[in-house]
Image 1 (cartoon, rainbow, N blue to C red):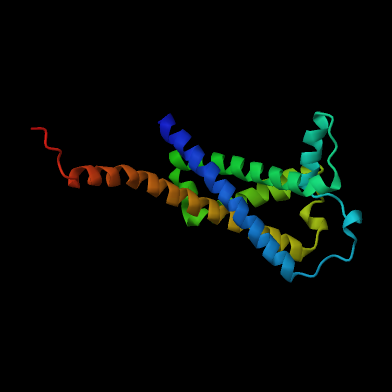
Image 2: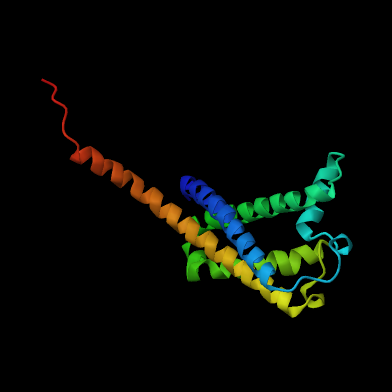
Length: 182
């Protein structure tokens, strides 16, 4: 196994995961603007899973998140998770290229199933999907498809850019005017 390719894949996946988390967040915001808001005041709504994780982490160092800090901290947790899962995906893609099939959509489904459907409820961070509105779960599924596809597209573009970079610099060297040494 070429660990250089594994490390490169992890870095490409990490960057892809960060970009994909941004894309997922943007689509989520766009969908939220189109879907009627809950009639429950924000102060009565429970914290989402990322805020719960951020609160647990900060409590380890004796800090309690204020309401103003919760959204940013939850966002940070989401990006760290997206980057971490992206790094794992990128590393695996280097040694098992077939995981990149269907432009990352199966990867997005796997993240939705593994994290959103199984792990988050099992850890008590959210209700199981069976107790949430079907429309909301459909949205979550679609958002994870966006994440999977965006991770793979970014990873693939970055990988191609790196593969082409040496050939471009070699072309510049071979077409440059030789220096007169005499």
